[in-house]
Length: 98
Image (cartoon, rainbow, N blue to C red; front, side, top):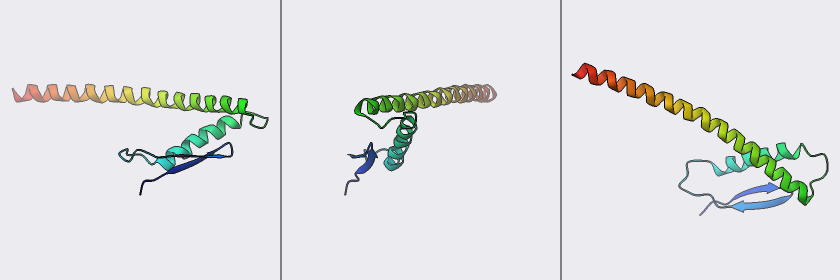
């Protein structure tokens, strides 16, 4: 049976069917998205009108994108460092083999 993940936002339930071949937990992903939305929603003092909902979703998306970008840059630098070290080690091994 295929798993259907549910997430409640602004009092409405949304359902989605995750890709079975991914190595992530879709329930955790939905919960994480909801956290971003709740954090953005807490910045608005009024009840959530449809106009505010769009602003909340946009703010949550921007915060999520910012966090993703920071992680991407961090791990991109780490990957470059590892590649450089591996290359250096391979050069040293090649020199000792000759």
